[in-house]
Amino acid sequence: MNLDVTDINKQESGVLVALAEKGADDTIIDEHLNELAFLGTTANIETKKIFTQKLEKPDPRTFIGKGKLDEIKAYVNDNKIDVVIFDDDLSPSQLRNLERELKCKIYDRSLLILDIFLHRAQTAQAKTQVELARYQYLMPRLTRMWTHLERQRGGTSTRGGAGEKEIETDKRVIRDQIVVLRKKLEKIEKQDRVRRKSRGNVVRVALVGYTNVGKSTLMTMLSKSDVKAEDKLFATVDATVRKVVFNTIPFLLSDTVGFIRKLPTHLIESFKSTLAEVEESDVLLHVVDVSHPGFEDQMTVVRQTLKELNAVDKPTIYVFNKIDQLENYDGGSEEFLQELKLRLKGIGDDGSKVFMSATNKVNVESLREEIFKKVKKKHYQIFPNYLKDE
Image (cartoon, rainbow, N blue to C red):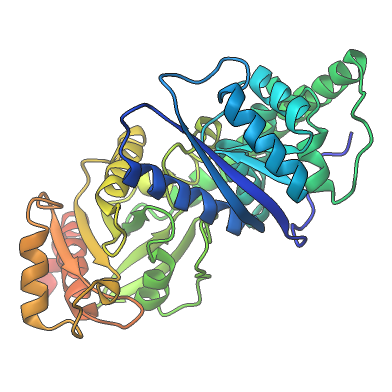
């Protein structure tokens, strides 16, 4: 059984499937599906059609109702679709039944995110973390899992008739791999803790936010260094740390993985060491794509994730980015910014607020001033004699 990952260069065709409670807001459903389609694009899967169904609760056997399943099955067969992507997590039995019915690869949301992370991770730590999370997620879903693994192997499998004995062998291999990866991760995390401890006397600022809100662009602008920024989800998986100096006061600025709704639990657990940059930071820059129609929901997701990391009460600067993409934007005039502040009154009022465009470098100085205020305050707490020497 080969679980190695290859580049996902070959584009595949896919359909999206979402289930919503009866009476659910269609606007929110569309927004979630747009995000799922963006995830598919990031994984090189082209969305050909979207299927939605409103039910009181998911069908325990196939997640969706029989009529909708027949409709999807007909479309998949007629259009030679490669992948069917569900916006929620599927149980092992639902996955098995759907594979049997649709006879194509089935992804649920968590598996798609894990697949993207696998191809985005660059450092040994991130690769180990994602691989561990993937194995933990796949373990109970291993039955006929060739439908997922063939994409990562880059070949076509013919092992559809694998028996229980072979599945048990595969499970044993995965269990062994989980033990190996955990030990490897413990060693890496120990080294990482020592490295972070050595930076204990320097103020630490962490960029946080929903995925694809412009954190990496801000990182590049503030640190004047090259940091990968793409119009794709999870362009940053590995934590990136840069030393920055504002007015003779140094601090460390870190860019971390973007958050997203329904982020797989195993992934959060595995990435907690990387996200320690957030937990151990002194100041947070909560970056928000203010042009996104659902930015308030995205802010809620970020705050919930920060709560899980025990970092929700840290001094925070709310950076409302991408104002240039808002309707009626006129170059960032004072009048436009005042109207924006009034419109967003009550959002982010528990901390500093900056309205800007990182791409067009609008209001960059305002952000630098806010960062400097908070960094300077913390710096003087660490080095009280610094103030006397000035």
